[in-house]
Amino acid sequence: MHTNESVGGGRAPSRSKQHRIECRMPSDQANPLPTNLRRELDLAREAALSAGEILERYFRNRGFAIDQKGRDNPVTTADFDADREIKRLLRGPFPDYGWLSEETADNPERLSCRRVWIVDPLDGTKEFIKGIPEFVVAIALAEDGQPVLGVTYNPIKREMFWCARGSGCYMDSEPVHVTLTPSLAEATVLASRSETSRGEWKNYEGKIRVNPIGSVAYKLALVAAGRADATFTRTPKSEWDIASGAALILEAGGRITDIDGSEMRFNKPSVKLKGFVASNALLHEQIERLMPHGDRQ
Image (tube, rainbow, N blue to C red; front, side):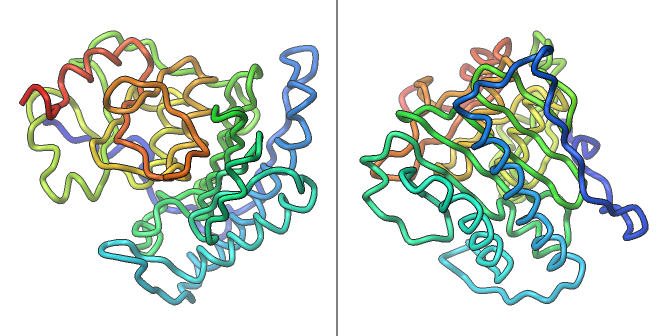
């Protein structure tokens, strides 16, 4: 297994280079956005930027408290403050939409809603705590179980990935697309920092080139933007980890499935999803053959 630290890596920008990101919509003539999602996308991006400012402030000042939600599952005051800000900006304008967030107590009423916001106010909390700029605000909108809007924002690197169904995928104001890499031998695959540190990727040594990166949502956004070719995991993840990235991957021309090859559905009674494979589509079956699987070990 070759490792590569270049994709998504690097230091946080210095304060002298900080500025509020400007993400312009594509012109209506170039690529019209669906009118039934334009307001949702505008406000989701505004919420991501505003929550990102909260996260950046905590990240720079290191003035946050840390608690544990479970084994190896930290949470900080930054998570909760960002969650409140996103909720403030999105819930009022869309009172009929359901709400599912990592840092909000789940309400089963969401299951009866056709549209549901799925939010991770800080995906990559462990990296955030360690001072590694590989964490994001992740906001998705699911409609009838399908991800139709995704916004993923890295506030330290000033990277905004966004899409709405039928509009294509963008990084800041530029359209992006998955890669055309046809072979795993040529591919860069993003892996979980936690999983690689635990030795869970040793099976792939000598078979693929691996780049450990923090945050599931960030890895998915990088694949959607063509900065890497694929990412996968056999570890179960929650809907809020995946939903925004799933929307981005699909709009960027890629493919995402669970580890059994099934289409991913969201807003389910159980928020836990099986591990997933996300790729440029050309590599999907090759990855599925590579991954160890319970019924063929």
